Length: 64
Image (cartoon, rainbow, N blue to C red; front, side, top):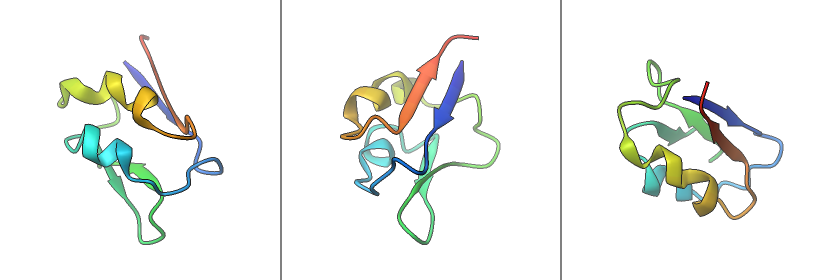
């Protein structure tokens, strides 16, 4: 699984963190970032739902 984040598009809504807290967090500015060691998102089965939950589609998930 490949997770791509467009931090320029992110508005800090936090839906990624609410949907898949095992893979995402927010930095001090409220922008999405992956948790260290979770770059492939496999620890949280809800990662696939994040692109649909993000109001600005700042996160994409694809199979390798």
